[in-house]
View 1: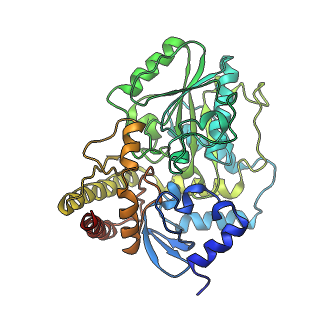
View 2: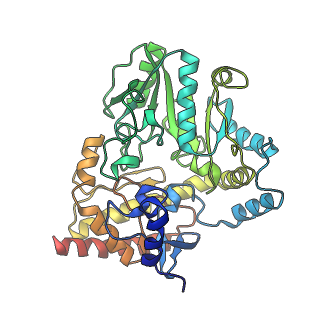
View 3: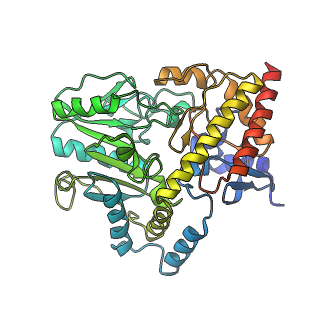
Length: 423
């Protein structure tokens, strides 16, 4: 056996801040020490000590087909044999852009990036450049990556660390950022360039929009001449073939994508109409660039992933998520542990409260009541891996069979009973 999880974590902390390259991985909000992944396949992940977990993290969303899907691995292998990066355009960049245009109503042009953060940052710059306005409105608990202007009240990106903001972000950087409570219609004035929204927020747990909220938001933006941006880094091509736009029947002006479109490799994208994208360099005056944008391995993996996602795949994903959510709700109830298990499409949330949160403050109260860390570790002991943060959601994949879901529900029931016994 290679070194243990503890040994690797101690080594990591000497050369990597906190021992991790993304803060939530340090287990700070759940306690204990992280497991170090060794390999993964389908619904499973093995740590360096050889323990196998049923994995519902799936890299926070990209693993919609499960880990190491043979078609995706073969696509990456074939692409890598031809070279891993060129700094020149490739046909696959066109193919994946064509796929996005074909799938999402309203999208006419796409620019690829290397991360969701980069996509959101660039999309806001584009909206400001296209409108000539400075202000940005976002909602508390919605996470749009870690660029300065969008980090305020940023959901799981900072909330899992017990933070409300970020050192190093100046007052000037967020001076044009307005933060509004979710599911309450904000005042949208004509000095705002863009309203940024997770159409289905999944970074404060799963807190869907109330009935008609997105439609009203669209109408208010239209009235003030403000652009509406859907951050679909999580929901894009997971909720439906056309993402949140198809699922909710609301069309924004600008989109951000990531995760699924990279098949597990670093990728992001932002998109809009041809008119709006015409403001982007080299066509217009809004500059954006990236040496690894449109990376040939990422585009190969993304295309292979999108090929998996036909109508039957979405039916399967929804059925799997429904089985998981309903089964967990029943398991919690049987154990006497108060919990709400929301599900929208193939996304599943968990709140240890008796009512469904509708905003960040309510979600935060549930996340900070101390139940999640206890259940998290009880599940880890039973071979089920959830994200090490109470603001995250569960990502069932095409590889999570009914039998695996049933095993998970059984483990949840046992873990819940163990938690109740300590209360």
